[in-house]
Length: 359
Length: 234
Image: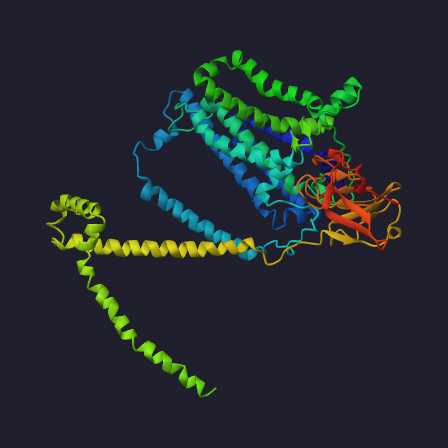
């Protein structure tokens, strides 16, 4: 038992968790039919349940998972896992029907149209009542995790955001507060609002399937699962005192020493590669960072526009293409920067503390 | 005292006496209301004309089934409209009044405003090479005595403003929120903090005590740590 726990602990690290999640995600998106098969999905589901049952034997694991703050996250894992499986299974079913020339299952259910009110509203109302009742019971059964009155000179260790913001807090480890706390949330909301205007293809209107919407669904699910849910899980269960990373069976101690020495891109460029001192002028100092961003956000999209995405560009037009590329590249930049941090201890690509401007 | 108390109701009586006429005023006010059609017609002539026109057009359908309200309905409508507008005004006023109480929250019951300038004892009370945390809760400063001198570090993390904790064994400040780490000097070396901790003005008062002034801060990235008040040579 202890050997297994040790093995799990030593395997776990931010980069291992993140890479595993991306691998599983890619597997799911590449082979949706096989992955939603009841045996495969059942095995994965049972594996997760089994892991929790195994973990609950450990006092420390039980302590973290059973905390009143963390209960929603445990629920979240199973609820979102189930719904992702269910939606993908239905989508795959429709893919097969379309491939066989049959009508989609939405069409076979009923061609009749019904009014939203009262048919849908009543169902929603009953569900809302059930939810309210469940929340009341939850509030009675589980004590609210309230703490002492706020004190500006005392930061609890670890200080954790509300569970729904733990993904953002995890991002803040890798980014400047202006980026992870202000710009990214804004871009996420604006980007979600922009989706229907960018993707105005009426192809799958009225039914749900995967193959005709492969990239749209994959991009959304990547943002939702990898960049939001996985980061919340890491922030909730695996970040301990001093925001250090702890394995699921590792005891949270404030004295764990993790070397996290970080280096800016300018220091890499001038000191390590050119072997000279950092320039005094901030603009010359950060020139490599500006160049890197220019290449990433301007040159690569321009090159893709002429080659790989030529057809896409012609189909959706310049304005849509540029917005789509800007949003997509920002989304990819997020895990990219995290990998740079893990691989090279890269701190900031552009670091201008003079103006509090860091990327 | 006892003589005065009967006196006070007495002056009130004359006030109570005029009240009946006041009570009659509503009745008098009710009098003009039948006459209301005249005054609103003068005030806003457009609406009374337009509004009845629409029900009239619809009435042929409903009139056979419902009550024949006839010519009374436009007047009643106007009456209702006036009460409705009154209700809306009252509702809006009540809402604004209720929301205005939120202004109260601009003035919190408790303010955390420690003194900006304070004395913290003689220099020899601070050991060489030690981070002194005795003032962190009260004033939000760490006092550090290095071979060069004594300096006062801010306890506010430059990433998002949590309070890092001093880890004696690891000889570093470590922030519990996002894991930023700082050397004893205040220089950031790990985690996301973009710049070093700030230092406060430190000097010797006339009585030989150290005087820290938090209203003056010195930032390393602006080259301010070399300024005279940033370090107290010992």
